Amino acid sequence: MTRMTTEQALTQALHEEMRRDARVLLLGEGAATKRPGLAREFGPARVRNTPLAEAIIAGTAVGAAASGLRPVIDLLFAPFLTYAMDALINSAGKLRYLSGGQCEFPLVALAMTGSGWCVGGQHNHNLEAMFVHAPGLQVLMPSTPADSKGLLKAAIRERNPVLFFIDLGLLHQEGEVADDPEEIVPIGVAALPRQGTDVTLVGYAKTVPVCLQAAAELEPHGVSAEVIDLRSLKPLDTACVLDSVARTGRLIVVHEASGLCGIAAELGALAASRAFGALRAPVVRITGPDAPAASSWALEQAAVPQAQAVVDAALGLMAEPLRRTPVVEDAWRAQA
Figure 1: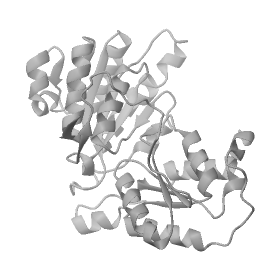
Figure 2: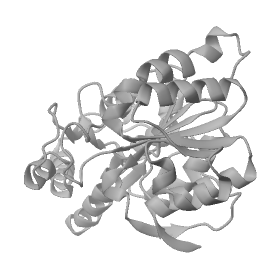
Figure 3: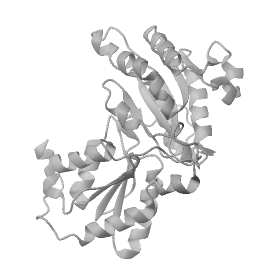
């Protein structure tokens, strides 16, 4: 194990996968400039800067993937993905289906997202739910350096297009990362960094540390909180969430993106439709506002879910009167 930042872990994953598979390319806005070690080792044929033209970058990646290559494209900030949506959604996401499986589109699109750098609304916009809505795409958003490396390696090896969101606020966070180049994190499997019995806290990216902090602060109140790190937004590990809700009977979902039609809404509907008998209190969503991100640090942070809000919500749920008799732990499976 080696201690490194998320940014270093992502670069290490690219090094290892490009050595492993000569079909892997890295294209993007400043891709060679930001990662000079990759440019030196693999040369301009496999690592190159591109113009600031997201639609062209994504379109090139789709064509490269269809011809048998495995492109990784760096589109810098998530709002710029809107320029690339036609290629990513209408081509990469749909053409394998429309071709009857004759074509595959193994590509990865990297984009930084979220608060923490005060870059304002044109560079900070959490768009992950937009791509979760798109058929054929997979969507990842890890919270640790180890998962960032392991999931990026898995994404590069995947046969389908993957949107890989990098939380800006976690870019320089340090953590222990495996040295084994063959160790990957499977797509579609959530992590359970903390077990508990009273309430389930679900987050991804920077809201996972928020949930962990809230869980620690709830302990002196006699509340045992379980924390789930989704890691993969599509495919979604519904079994992990439902198993946890069946044990705790209470669910709080936390994310920085707007709550309207977001991941928290999906998980709330999941719990209501497939674990209703286990719920002891209403599902709570703690999300960002339906508003552009501010450039001011104070205003930016005011829009981000904080641990105290999670603590207050959990204590409120614990005070709710018991609505129904809890069912056995795996009762949700019978409703599937």
